[in-house]
Image 1 (cartoon, helix red, strand yellow):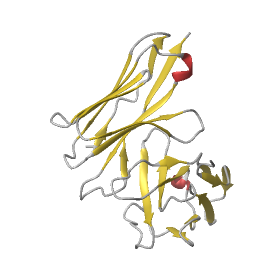
Image 2 (cartoon, chains in turn green, red):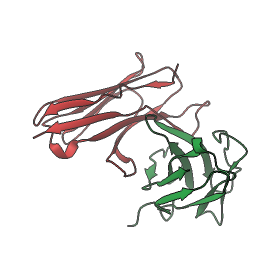
Image 3 (spheres, helix red, strand yellow):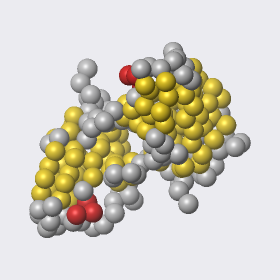
Length: 115
Length: 113
């Protein structure tokens, strides 16, 4: 079956512009995660959605970052007024979300470059 | 201090060698442990998943977790050039982490033919 898909695969933007990154999780997965991977660093947790529960936003680095998940499926990560330090690969993952289910499956990522 | 420490390498071995990759961690609440493989410009691919302490084997790969030492390992037997990638350890669980994963920096491995 189809895995996690993300779009666009690459995004180049100018400092100060807003960007939207999209994630389509695996069908039937109720949990969705966003991570950020910067050069020379491991993956950094950003935000987590589980079903209809309030999202865990504790990893968002600033109020310029926001995310939503519509209809329990597709998610959009929005970065407002982008800065050069926002340049990174943004990865989305999904999991079944049941009790004890912790295996997260990742998409290919969106490579964001802020000039 | 990072919650999860992983030597970034790079690590270079000849084909057929046994590879040992390791991570240490400081959060004793972590309950489950994973290894991901990431090829260049691709998303991480789940290799191994282990819950609590013990060993798990899958083909040429063996994962070990020692919670008393806060130390996890991934062994690759009969390494192949196709194993050349970055290997990321990840862990989660417990009240402080919930469902999020905390990752190591990743170890870059090259297997030379």
